[in-house]
Length: 367
Image (tube, rainbow, N blue to C red):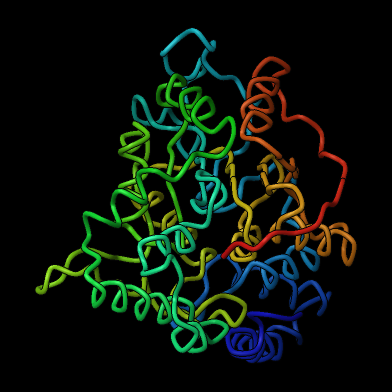
């Protein structure tokens, strides 16, 4: 187990060992006991422990969750049935609560999560804003300050430099608004909007709220997203754009300012507290940091990695190393039309489309 395991994993492993010692004398199967304890920690980790996706996969391999039982906070998946493409009505079947009763009227059945850079938009927005710099280039002395895993701190210095050069938030907003959407993305977002309350849509991005919201408003899609989870940004007391980290975490794989597994996990926990439990999760992304939340996806869920990008490559590597470790269907996309067609075809067939085959391509850079 690599990546996130060292800190959180060792803490949890010590708890498992202590629990196994207590249970072993009366347990007919020590292996099952250990697996059961691992499963418990994966579902409800102690407050001071963050469990990453690959650790959760290990627990699933040791003690697979029964196929006919939903994971905590999730509903048992049913056939995917969406509203007709020409209709704005809600889902054709009423959602149910976790205990099997009827859920609140209009409760969403599916959670659809998007990345932003090189997913919703077809550029890396942090590269795009360099066009506001003198000569459309950052000085080498500034670029040399970047350290792997601390990209947010680097971008704070970039925004500070741009402000010192006279670049104001309105100048940056104009750049964000001009970034093109990925091919087919506008049609996909319009399709999702027509499904009424079928989907709850959120965005998790390591960019910044100012840029993401500027781009979405300009494209006319801001209202579709229930929550935009990104690094806080906005004008400071001097009128310059300032950037802050989203949170802190203990995941060794992700940048210091954001772990998308934790962001999505916290959101699911928050919605479960509100009484909202999703039948399926759909995740559309492209970057290496979009791989970490894949540990939250289960059977019936769908991962949409952009073909040939880091997220796609990491999923392929995980599949090759341990085929049973990834339960969700994987549908690579080249344009957002691929995502829309998959959702449409699934609604017609009443069941998720089978897992797509792998057709690797050279990866591109994305955070």
